[in-house]
Image (tube, rainbow, N blue to C red; front, top):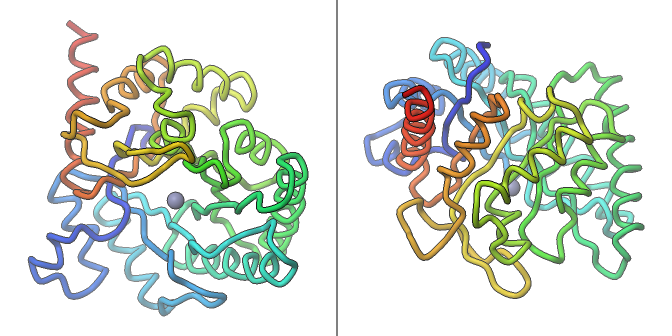
Length: 290
Ligand SMILES: [Zn+2]
């Protein structure tokens, strides 16, 4: 895999289905034809067992390799590592099901939401999350699983997943991949990304605490986002001027820090906006070279 910023959608673009898409195996080719090179497979409704056949997952992985598309996976939405014991146990099984299938298709990371504070204080919630994920990580090691754990930065005040928490989990737990959803951070902090410098500060913090390699190879989610007092409300397209953050600011940061993230577009027009982000990065690079 060459070290470059890759772009792709979170899930199958609706237009592909209109175009008569029959099997998941065709998705990498259609993305390649659009000039995209990443795809996040949505396993967000899965329970404790993979809901794709191993053979089908392998075919998807092979199609992705042939079309130079990097695969990642979004794990179950029904995960709470800080919930009641039975909830935490079921959550760990769901993560293990996802990483198992991720290996079948050679997806490099399973992105997931760590959980909710509920009645606990933040410190307890973080320590519990780390302890549970250490157990998941060691079970993955004994199962010989290669896919990485990708706890994501979250957009609501009720959710575990501030940047400091995600940094702490990445530092403490083996076999993790840094996952930064920039829209979520923007929503969590009430629209905090107003200038390039606001994003630069996050990149610098990550570099200081986790190192240059981890910064440069982060996995990203991006969309414009609407928020209220408690954080994230919903995702918006890149063209909607009323909402932030602007992708052009992140493109500046990517260039400045020599980053090569996998950039997953989570706006309502998945692949269309992924292409727009790719063009924006190319424009920022071209401007700097003039
Ligand atoms: Zn997510």
